[in-house]
Length: 287
Length: 277
Image (cartoon, rainbow over all chains, first blue to last red; front, side, top):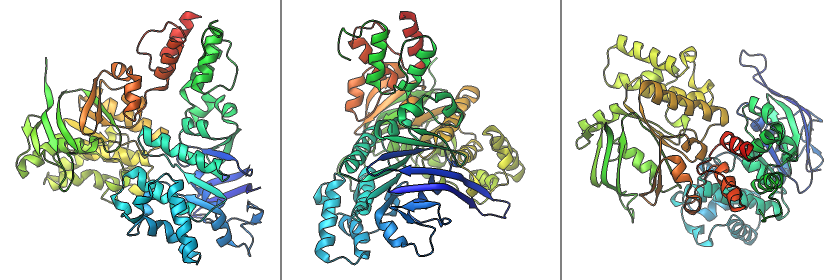
């Protein structure tokens, strides 16, 4: 099991007036090769949770396991954990600092003290994997557009060849086309065998990409399951400051109005087919 | 009666060293009290246009009158900025003070406003945006949405006639996003402040009085949101998106369901479908 979290608790500034219980006993498991989404509004504990997953926050023994290793164990090899778990922060383009794209992407692997040819190989491979043209390698990352910069930052993480990739709001701030491209890039990374955990506010995005979702609310897991299962709870999610995709909302609403629409539909084409079916136009034309 | 507050005639702007202008021949009018949304891909010229409205940049061609004034000298620029406030994308980049009310007073202090007047206006502005209780708090303890509301209060204290929001909800979670958007709508409806709302979120743009779509420095589409979004293929080609329900409506129509034009929301769609049931 790549990631296993058991009853994880995290308190910020304990014993002060600012004491805040960010995580109140969270348990979850991510299976090999899965694409998992973590959703929750600001302050729900998402960021605290993912910081635990690569050892940025210290956990108690027995709470967080990565590839079977207990991160709370005194002897835990956190360097190995950080190699296995690549973490892409929110707005990662703000972390770019090198003179050229190639040097920036090479920063991580260089710290691993790999041979020069190996570093070079990983850098050019990572740049290709994020869909950038190799010609950008010698450019300053600061000359690139926002979306390209974000790709460079992700390439820097991929060059470490993590087996698990965690992304915090990877599509935030991008325009709709940029968003679609970013999500298809992450899907490609997943399809090539990487386990992916994506943190997001957007139910549309997680619905489109993820096998399974965990909804965090006030430091606890409120719902988990496939997107279809989670989106059934549209009213409860709304109360947590989250929205379900519009089509899921419509499907749930029509079902309550007496339409014969099966539960768990949220994709536009599925909902369209179900509506046509109900209206007796199902066989007329493919949706 | 027409009462234009923003008048742009063939406005152009080219950054130094840039190969092409960022804003090209933009001509448009915004009426006082309107809520206008601007959509467009990154790099389409939206933010450059916003900065022109606020005289942070001056046009390199054409004429732009904001609240009746064309910014030609530095003094004009200050006058334009007083009538046209701006709220930026990143809440952390526009907060300058360590206490909420001091941040809110920053603009007025720079104008040399008398202290009693500052006090009065700051209190009013913070109350208006629902942040009066946090007046003495440190901005670092606030959420993103709250920080944006403080930024709005700082602008309101200047008593502007126009507020430009440049992707002010992009970095917020859904709750913060709704709060800031609703605040802008209320300021528009109740206080008659003209709003220019730049965004990537189609569901926000759908609620504007009028929608402008920018592409490569030009205004590519303009009109009521329903009319603009009805051009689904064109919008998608411009790298944008249309509200989900418009896409679903188009799909249902193709399959022979008779639906009226202009369905944008789940409510509207549900009502129409129930009528067919």
